[in-house]
Length: 407
Image (cartoon, rainbow, N blue to C red):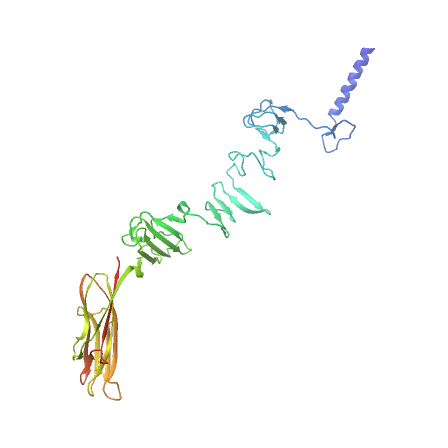
C-alpha cells in the first residue's frame, strides 16, 4: 500500500507542474501572488534579485561557449578578453551586443558624460557611408557627408566646411598656406578664382603679369562675386624691390599693368631762367626770347614739366598779335605749349598784356636737350616789345622741372 501512495503523489505533482507550464502567465514569489495579466512571467520580491546565467564569453563575434544561441538570448559575461568586458550581453543573431552598463557604455553615450573612451573605437557617427546629422528642436543644424564635407545651415555641403550663415571669430581666423592667409597662385589672370592674398613662386603666363615678372611676386586680388567673369582690381609687386603695379582686368586676364609712381620713385630738379634783354617780336617768324632758354643733359624716361610767362607791350600807337611757344631742340611740344596774345596802344584798348604757356615733354633717349621760348608777330601795324630785365613790365620767366623715375 505504501508504494501505491508514492506513485499517486508523484502523479499529482507532475499533473500540477504540467498545469503551471501551460498557464497563460506565471508568477514566482516568496509569497502568494497573482501575476500581471500582461506578462507571461513575473518574478516578484522586495529582498531578492533576478539572476541570469553567468558565462565567460571569448569575443563578441563568436557564440562560444554558448551552443546555438538564438536571437535575444541574454547572459551576463564574466570574462575580460579580446573585445568583451564584464557585463550584460545579448545575441542579435550574429554577434554578442553589450547592454549599457555603468559609465563605460559600448553601444551608446551616457548623457552625463563618458569615461575610458578610445577614439579609435568609441565615437559618434556612422559606419555605413551615410551622412551624420545633428538636430536641435528637430531641425537639422549640422551635416557631415560620407565624403567628409561638413555643412552648417546646408544639407549639401560642397566644401570641407560649408557654412550658409554668418561666421564670427573671437580670435584670429587662419587660412592659406601655413595659416598666414596667403595662397599660392602663379596665374594672375585666372578666371574663376576668388578675392584674396596670393604669392606667385613662378609667375605665368607672362602675359598676365607686369613685364619682367619672374621668381616670387605678391598679388592682391579683389574680384567680382561672379566667378564666371574676370573682373578684378589687382595690385602686384616683386618680393625683391619696392616697385608696385596695378590694373583693373576688365574681363581680360592679359590686361596691361600700370606702374604706381610715388615720391620715392622720382628724383626731381627745378631750374629757372629769365629774359635778360628786351626785344622786338620778329614779324612772321618765331625767334627765341632773349634769356628764356636752357640746355640740359637728360636720360631716357625723364619727364620735363615746363612753364613760361611774361609781358608784352605795343610801342607808340601800334597794335599786334604775338604767338608764343615752347620748343625742345627747336621742335614744338607734341601737346600744349602754345598761345596767342593781342595788344593795342590805342587808349580804348590795352597797350600791355601778359602771356603764359605750359606743357610737358617725355625724354625719348639719353642726350642734351635745349628748351627755349619762342615768339613771333603775326598781324598788326607796328613793333611789339617782349622780354627785358627785372626793371621792365615785359620781363619773362622760364621754369623747368625734371622728374626722373628711379628705375
